[in-house]
Each structure stands twice: as structure tokens, then as C-alpha cells.
Image 1 (cartoon, rainbow, N blue to C red):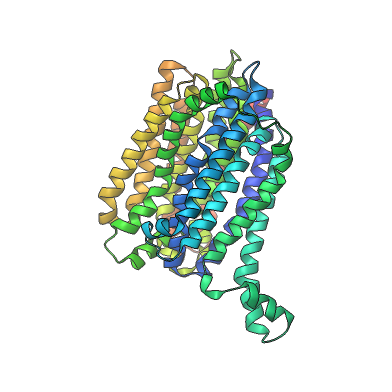
Image 2 (cartoon, helix red, strand yellow; image 1 turned 90 degrees about the vertical axis):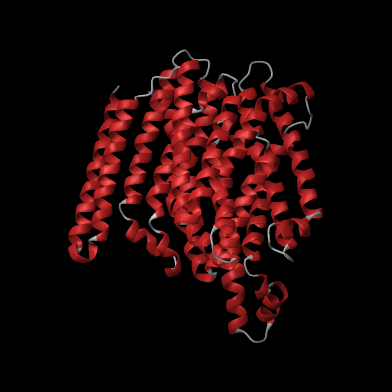
Length: 494
């Protein structure tokens, strides 16, 4: 249990930065949904969706390959400079290509005349990609506090820049007709640039992150070990395929909504904006998953040689599932309150949130269960499973979007992640058996679905039931939290 306590401790620190940072970042969602039109927010969501896809090329999953080779005897010290050189050269090359062809790329994305957006995103991708391996090194060396500090700084810079450009500068121009402040604002602020300031704020935050990670980058000798590089690329290549598939699962719905809804481009982008804003609420659950992954990935690789590793993996997955289930209950039971953070025009998409919550729950379980093919060097399995998931996502979005709009995208996401979880578990049990408590997890899942069903009904009756609706929901939520707390208390005693 002491090993799992170490994992829990690191997760808590990573979680502090992820959850606190993302909560700060999430404050931008209600801000954006009030500052920008639904169509404009749809453009932001669409461009960031493409950025997530391109990021896979920039990094080439070298962070996971780094973890694998960093824990190998006799070669670990060569893993960081090799991975760093590989990603650094890729980032410079591909960022340069994006900048050179920025106008053509903007045209292809249906944003003619917006080549500057593509140039800014090229810089964001470049800085973020180069920062990825130093971040991984901090995780591998169990330095969560420095990791968390840099992550929080990134988010604070991003939010501050957004407020500076989108609030402070317009306010100055509106309230000062002359003077130094007016001249300063007029010199650096252009109202017509609009959502471009969202992207500019991001690139400033990415630059600050890169500068903060320079000590880790400069502390090593920049040498490319060709033999190790080939091994790392060979290991990572199937994960890149899986990464592409994973990003397709996460973001292709925005692109398909833009092109496959029956409305005009402007109307479809408005639907993308509504869908994306509500999707953001559901991904509150992903905050814990992300924090856990930061701690778990290097932890799992470090445990791989231990004969008790399968039991450790099984328990960590079970406890992760329980903690995530609490998140599903706490978010899903109070959607009528949480939805108020969005602008009124975005609240009609509330119904997708429970669907995406369960999708994120299964995605988190998948990440846990996928460890077998990484430690057994069978990364091709990740590519196969990812492709199956991507095909499910594409097929269901293609069929359902014209019929039920963004609800089709939500159901496609859930079907994809559920299927991937079942496949990775069944396949893994044949190659690297791990004694997951599937029966207990199924019982808890049934309880979660039951409580959410009751609470969702109580939400619909809030106008008639009044405070009784809130009281009953609170009681059911507390009962579930107490049940999970009892399981964790028993685990600590073992």
C-alpha cells in the first residue's frame, strides 16, 4: 500500500496544479461565451482541435518512449538528450513549414485571410513540443512541485494576457480619449483582431513555459544517439498511430459538425461553439485523469520489473475508477447549477454533459489498462485499438450528426471509449494478466448510473420540488461519497 500512497501523493501534487490551473483556465469559458458570439467560439474550438492533432506529429510520442528507455539499465542517461534532440528538430522543421504555408493552410481550413492565426499556432506548437520532454524528465525524476509550478505559471500568464487584451485594453480605449494610456492601448490593440488575442495569449504563455524549462534543457549535452533514437522511434511509431486515432476520437467531432450539419458554415460553427462549451464542463472530470496520468505513467514503468506489479496495477486502476466515479456524481448531479457559468446562448447543450462524463470515465480506465502493451513493448496493440476507436468515432459521427446533431457526436464519443476499454482489457488479459476487480467496478458503475438517473429526474422537477430537489440530490451524492470513502479507509488499513 505504501507504493500506492506514493502514487496518490504525486497525483495530489500534480492534481493541485492541474485542477487549480484548469479551474483558472475554465474561468475563460464563461468569459469567452460572453465576449464572443457562438460562431466565434466555434472557430476557437475548431482551430484548437486541429492543433491537438498536429501536436502528435511534433512530439511523435517521444515522451512515452523516453519513460520506457529512461528506466532501462545502462542506457537511461542517453534517453533525455536523444528524445530532446529528436523533438526539438521536428518542432523547428514543422513550425517553419506551417509559417511558410500559413496562408494556404488558412484557406484549406476555410479561414481565408487568417494566415496570421496559423503562424501563431505554429509558434505555440513549437514551444509546447520542445517543452514536452523536459516536462517528462521532471515527472520521471519525481519532481512534481517544479512541474506544478511551471504548469500554473503557464495558465496564469495565459489568463492574464487574455484579460489584458480582451478586457483592459478595450476599457482603456472606451474610458480614455487622450493621454499616455490611450496612446499605449491604441498602439498595441486592434479590435478587429478579435479572437486572435486568444491565440496570442497562448503563445505568450507557451514562450514563458519554454523559458522556465531552459535549465532542464541546457543542463544536458545535446547529443543524438542514433542507435537509441532508432529504438525509441520504433517503440513510439505505433503510439503515434494510436495518438492520431486518440486525437481523432477527441476532436474530429468538431470538424464533422462544421461540415456535416445541414446549416450554413456560420450556423454550424455556432453549433460547434455550443457543443464545445458544454463539452468543457464534462471534461472537468479529465482534470483528475490528467493529474493521475502525470504521476502514473512514470510510476507504472518504474514498477514493471516488480513481480507484484500486476496487483499494483489492478489496485491503482480500481481506486482511480472509484475516485473518478465521485467526480461523475458531483458534476452530473448539479448540472443545472454548473451550467450557469456559460452564456445563455450556450446552455441548450446541457444534455450532452452526462454522456461525455461517462465517456471520460471510460477513457481514464482505458489509460490505466493500456499499460500492458507499453511495458511488454507491444505498442502495435495501441495502434490497432486506437484505429478501431477512430473508425467507431468517424462512422457514428457520420451517421448520427445529420440526424441528432451534436448529440450524435456525444454518443459516438461514449461508444468509442467504452469499446476501446473493453478491447484493451480483453486483449491484455491474454498477454499480461492483471487481476482487475471487474465485478466490483461493474456494481459501482450501476450505482453511479442509478444515482445520476434519479438526480437528473430531480433536476427536471426543481421548479415544483424546490429545495427538496437540491436536498435529495445532496443526500444521494453524500451517500455515494461516503461509500467510496469507506472503501478507501479499508484500503489504508491493509
